[in-house]
Length: 157
Length: 157
DNA sequence: TATTGTTATACTCTATAACTATA
DNA sequence: TATAGTTATAGAGTATAACAATA
Image (cartoon, rainbow over the protein chains, first blue to last red):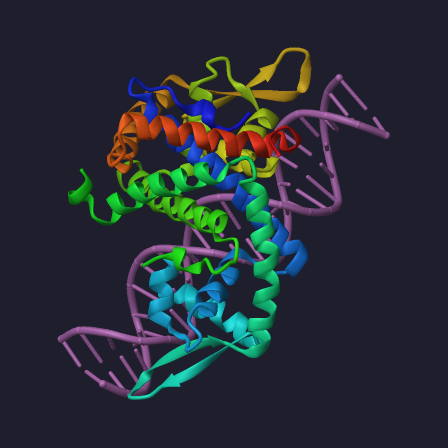
């Protein structure tokens, strides 16, 4: 049993979809969080921040990280502080703007992230193992519509 | 931009799907949380607990609520305490087991929940407005495979 | 002994707002 | 004045573990 029992509307399709979406996300997310904790002694926000940096070898500024991670600036400062203290990322001054920093992975951070990413991918592949290639592509496409609508409500209404 | 930039694998389809699923869920969830806060001065876990009770008029025991909400018992106690203090739910002794309670909505709680549920449904319908009926049915079905696989991994592997 | 529910505690994550230093 | 980032604070949400009462 789970939260999907919640739907009870006269227009129930969208509501039931939302509850199922939430249930699936929570199931996967709980497993990823607990595995990150057990196997790597880290958290999902820390993993996400490092993942952003892994794709930006030259580093990212604090406000760019904030935007991409969809959290406010103060939080990025806190998580970055932790990772700096552990030698996994570093703050690099930005030429021409002495207010700003670029945050980037250290070699040690990159090494550690690659390990985590390998394990993470296996967990995700297993989580979606019930889906065929075509299912995955369909889901990806339909969720894209949802995402686009959020970002440009007028165009897809 | 968002977290989907994170994918970087040799088997990227499942990973990209997961990041998109997470992004969509977060977008909707953030909006629901902030609307619940602004319009009804409440939180998502409180809404979810009341939603469970709305579907179980005779009430639910604490451990059943804990299971359905996928959180540990101590949290259910805390949320229930708040709702009791506001007169929205009540603890009813269970015949034949003096350790247990049934928690159920009060008439006031039911009235207030129905108001919230109406608004909540409108937010969700809007969130998925980019999807047609067929899209919704497809998404629902495919997410069902994911959910079932989590609950019975051997059958769908 | 096992189970139901509570209490106590601690920690992560988050948003907000005031602050500094540069621009 | 505006922007980049930090600090301080408060609160939500969670898990864990010890506990009391009952089974």
